[in-house]
Amino acid sequence: MIKTLRSQNHSLASGQEQLRFLSNGIFGSDKLPTFREKIDTLGEFPLKPANIEIFQVNVGYMCNQVCKHCHVDAGPDRKEIMGRETMQRCLDIMSKTNIHTLDLTGGAPEMNPDFRWFVEEAHKIGVKEIIVRSNLTIILANPKYHDLPEFFKKNGVRVVSSLPFYQPDKTDRQRGEGVFVKSIEALQMLNAVGYGKAGSGLHLDLVYNPGGAFLPGNQAELERDFKKELKNHYYVDFNSLFTITNLPISRFLDFLIRTENYEEYMEKLVDSFNPAAVKGVMCRNTISVDYDGYMYDCDFNQMLGLKVDKQAGQHINDFNLEKLESRHIAISQHCYGCTAGAGSSCQGTVA
Image (tube, rainbow, N blue to C red; front, side, top):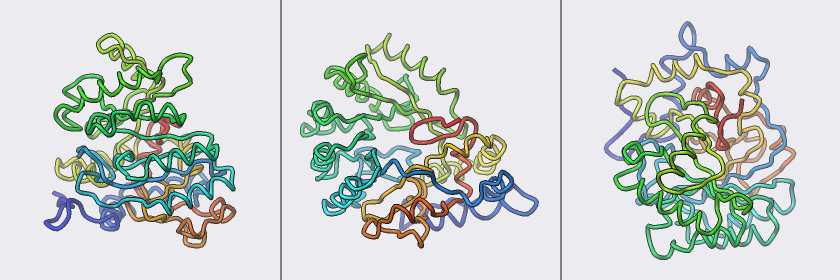
């Protein structure tokens, strides 16, 4: 039995310890092929980016929820928060480049004290698309957040919301007791100002990821079921559903090890490898920025401490678009999660 990565001093082992764990054991030689070996057979190694179009900025790991499968290990006790100076640097870069999308994530990004300032400034300088990844319950967590739907509308924000399922029991098992009811109320509040309504231009998307050690189902079919059930039972409308595969990182990796599902799940990811998905992985057009301004190829690499290629400059103070667009993307075995089945990205399936 593989030992858990938990310790007495930390809720989870560090990203580097997780990375070492993923790189050993069941991969290499006559075992499972490494991700590098897999894409090398396709002529895709080293993995390289296309044009960078998206700045996915993690403004802090603080969150009002402690979800069982959170790859960020976010929660109320996390103190890492992005400051306004780093936010301003991101805006300066976007104003001088063709990076057209600001994708704000966390934790609960709304809990950052400068979150509203960041959104307003991005709107002022004409950022083409501002995405906020909300857990929904934050809207009801405190009266100071109750006006978020109106704030989002005023600033043209695209809201991407987590909702594990359209039934209470499955949602609450993954996210905590009472989360489903609060999520539905928050969705109704967003609908009330126009989000998810035809012709409003206010986009409201939902995110589904499995509650266990299996791949998500067909995205189009799940979207149809979500729309039918949420409309019929709760009068909730939304635009699109994104399915995201759980990657073996942080709490989900610990869950796999604790339940003795790790090897079986990794075998499932490898066996489901889809060559067509490699072309659409999000690290090709996205740069992930952490609360301290360090850059990563994706949000998952951020959690593992895998910064972008050193030669490209690893901090936004050294931002160089030409070097970043010619860098080699850092990979490891967790990347199988983005290329399994129909593929997976923060925008849903890719193949």
